[in-house]
Amino acid sequence: MYAIQPKAWDRVDPHGCDYATNMTDAYDYARQWNEDCTIWKEGTKAWMKWMYVTDEQVSSAG
Image: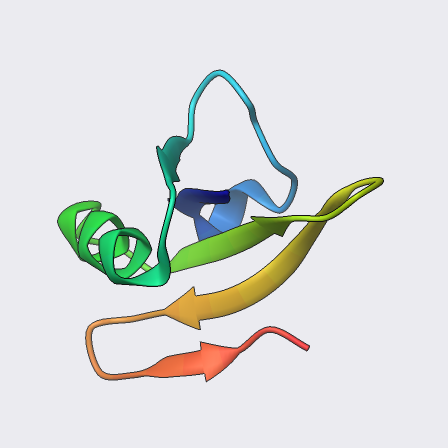
């Protein structure tokens, strides 16, 4: 599971983010926000910053 939200939010907001079950959908949702986004990956104990998505690029958050 992936959570997508604006990068400026800094922490996962479970009520305000979009969710995706795969990375293809996560990229598509991030681009729909029309601002820099963070894709979070659900871990076994906590959410992890996974990727940053901007208009120009996609990069690792780690």
